[in-house]
Image (tube, rainbow, N blue to C red; front, side, top):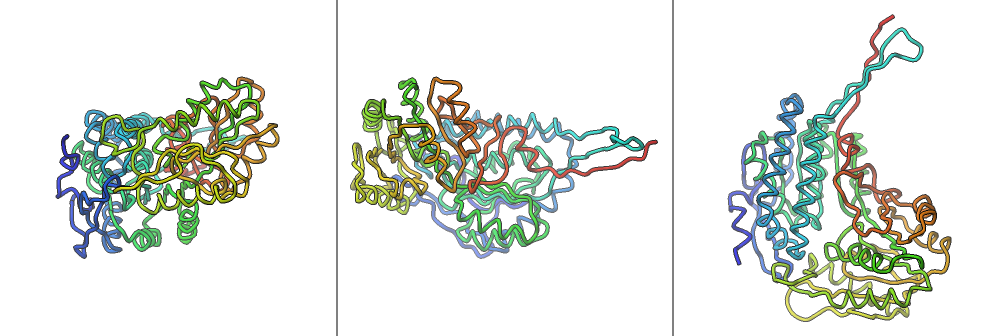
Length: 486
């Protein structure tokens, strides 16, 4: 088995600032672990505030020239990045698995998904349009001119270390913005590899900067406090999102926030159970359940509850757990020990309150941060796992008897990111689509993420949209020009 670290040379495990790969100003580094073994796989530069501001110097310095670059040329850079990622899919996927833990098949899927953002926004780059019209009262013309917002700061999570960066960098570059990305400390290597690939395809220096750090709070705060920063995009927890929104308010920054979720998956009695079970497996177990749109709460209508539960538990119990690079593994390691401890605590809390474990429920012995696929029934409404984001391979099943009842339970959360409904009744599906408080909804489908669709939530699950045509609009300001013309 080839060493996935061979794709990222030691000199490219440093900060990418302007036209340089350089050490942190302090010389500090931090370790990156393989979550399946707990062993260190690399040391990367640990930036401080001075390094973050140096990256902003580079992004600010490159801004005017990049904004003036013809849209077709910007599009060509994005297309070249898409092609490079596609051609190098296997090596990128192996690196994702090594530092994040997901099975290799899942990592390959992430590379395809992340690459597609570059292809989609390569097409959007040449379709950024203004408007020219006659004023309703006559006498003058209305002209609207879209302009890039300016240097952008991105804070990306560990669960999709390529795709979440791609989902931000691609539209920003399409719009003419320069970028600084602060990847999660657990998974910085994939973002460094992406920066290297974009350097190789010719993206100009200063347009894509990457700052790795374990001192995220201080570095990001300094960037947001600098008036040259004009946009913040963050993917992560609602708690951290609230903090960043407060900081961003001082300079009235444009913000895109994709925050926590607590998705309900609803299986109606008239659903095709084969479709529902397949969909539930995808919605729950994609990315080991470490996804903001994962099905956290599975509501099954009483007439089909017993059959659905038995078949779903059988499918969950048949999944193979192990190192993501090993053949045949369906469920890899969770990101760190804290995640395992949190999930184990949620299961214990539910059991203490009367829930029953059908499958899993006990963490295995040995090295690595593993937790087995777990199914619980008879989960009471006061169980913590129905209120908190689980972020792991644990599925609570709750019965319901009416649409009004399940709609109220599904909406009883501060979150509103995604939801899933399985029914063969079109009118029923439309009532759920109108009644559920979510930014996204899958009908008879467990996989809803798509670069061509607007991704984002309502309530405390976020602000703004990523992907689709709406995604590029998040990186554009609009100037209105009134032209006198009697």
